[in-house]
Structures are given as C-alpha cells and as structure tokens.
Image 1 (cartoon, chains in turn purple, brown):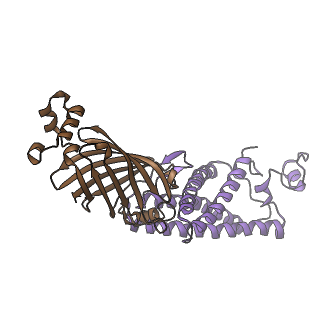
Image 2 (image 1 turned 90 degrees about the horizontal axis):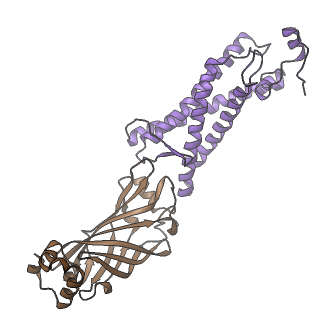
Image 3 (image 1 turned 30 degrees about the vertical axis):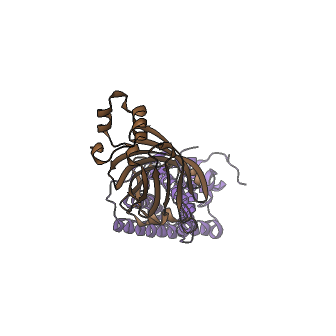
Length: 204
Length: 200
C-alpha cells in the first residue's frame, strides 16, 4: 500500500511526512545550537556543514512531497469535519509544504551569497553548486534573516498542526492523527457503511 | 652579469664546475644567479611575502598572507649544504580579505594563536638541487607539534646587499592538529613565499 486510497494514506505519504517532520525539527534544533557564539569554532563549522547537508535532504524530500501532493489522490477528509475545518487543514498542509521548500531554498541562498564561499559538500559526498547569486555581506545578511524568519514561521505552523492533530486524537477521538501513523482503515461502522465489505483490518 | 657584481671564491667556482658547468662555464654562469656567489648572513625583510593557499572542493579555496614574520639565514659559499635558515611567523597576522576566515584561522580550530603565538621553521639540511635552487629540510613547529618538512628554494634575484628567493612547500595540516574543514578544504597548505634577505 504505497499509494493513498480513498480513505487512507499510503506508505509514501506517511514516510515522507514523518521523515520531513523529524528532519525539520532536528534542523531547527541544530540551527539554534550552531548559532551559539560561545561554541568551539571547529565544532561550529561541522554543525553548519551537517545543517546544510540535512537541509538539502529536506529540500529534495519536500520537492518530492510537493509533487506527490499535487498529483497523488488525497483521501477523503475524516468524517465529522466541518467545511471550515476541512478548508483550514487543507490550507495548513499547503502552507507547510510551501515552507518546507522555502526554508531550505533560503538556506541555500545564504550559502550561495555568503562571502565565506564555503562549498556545500553533501555529506562529504558531492558538491552542490551555489545558486547563481552575487556574493555580498548585505545579501548574506538578508538571506540569513529570511531563512530564520521562514523557519520560525514553519515552526509555529508545525506546532499548530501538531496541536490540531492531538486535539483530534484526544478530544475529538477521530482518525485524523491515526491515519498518518498507520495504514489502518476507518472505524468498523464507517467501512461497512462505505463499502459493504466484511472487516479485514483490526483495531488494536 | 653576476661576474660583474662580485668575484666568486675559488671554492665556489670549484663547486660550480662540479655542479653546473659541464655544458660550458660561460653559458651556465650567465643563465641564472648562483647560490655560491651569494654567501653571507641575511636577515629576512618585511618586503618578503608569505603567501599560502588551501584548495577547496569544486575549485577555488582560501588564499592569504602572513603579514608578520622574522628570520635569518646563512648561505655558506664554500659548502651550500652547511647553509641554514630559521624562520618565525606569527599566525595572528594572517590576512585573507575576509575577517571571519581570519578569526577562524586564529581560533582554537586552527592556529590557536592565543596559545601558540608563533610557527617556527629551523633547517636541518640544505641540498643544492641546481645552480640556483636547493631543497631545505627542517623542523616545523606549529601548535606545539614539531615535524620534519621540506621546502624548495629558487634564487630569483641577488646583489651584493640583498637577495630574494622563491620558496615553495606543501604542508599537511592534519599532523599539527589543524585538520578542521577537511575534506571540504584540502589537507595540504601550499606555501608560495617570496623571501627577501638583507645582508647583515
């Protein structure tokens, strides 16, 4: 079950979602850590390079995620969601996908405009070229701020997104969070109602 | 030209014959300045240039100069191999055109110039490799570590008071505990120095 179905997310969507989620949370933590001025300079240099390599990883995954979002079918919204909730969640998902692209792109712009001109050597494996942008301290400063502001925006949206998921799981007790965790089907009654087929998937 | 500036000692002339004059004394002597004729004690002057570069993946790299250094050398006219040099440079004076790179090089990540104020080189042997060139081996001390290193020297200009050399050497930085940034930045530092000496 790689693909999404009418009622469930497939493994591709689920794995992309959680990989990107883990990476961006790790990258935000790493971003905070590496900006500490008191840090040992050699360690700081290494942390920046790790941040760039993981950031490019997110960019690639997010690009695939965006294409997947555009072309793969989306499961129907969980039953019981109001039109406003459906609209809000769809908007949030698009905003998160856009930010997972925009944040690493802005980071790439930082590396590209920096007068330090440090190559992006992806996990010491191959060089990712700089974007064709003029190097200057002014441009580097602007892109550093942009990268940080977009990252904070994304962190905020991630928190709202996560709180919404917990709200659905704990208060509303619906399938919103569960279906991003497993391939399990909707509740027995809904499935039987929807398809008339006998129940195959078990609830825990 | 050199003949006009000073008269070589008989010993130097003998060495010259052994080393270089096989093809004919006149042409060989006229072709380049020769080490033997430059015998003397010299102090390294501020007009010298201590340039270095570290390549980076994808091309380019860090290039810079050390602005502050000092040293002396002695050229033994009768026996080049008995010549010697001692050289000190101050990593605090590193210049790259980018202050953050300079701060990084001075920091504990690279030179740790607050703890180790100098990088020194003391020759242990000099081997003449041509009429105007030699290889110098010696001990390089940086960041508290001492290793044997080798530089090639080429005499480029010379008169009765002063002398200048082109000196090149490829130094691995990891043995000195300065391997930060590898493999993005090469482990090898290329030194390309123009050393000018003033006769004492």
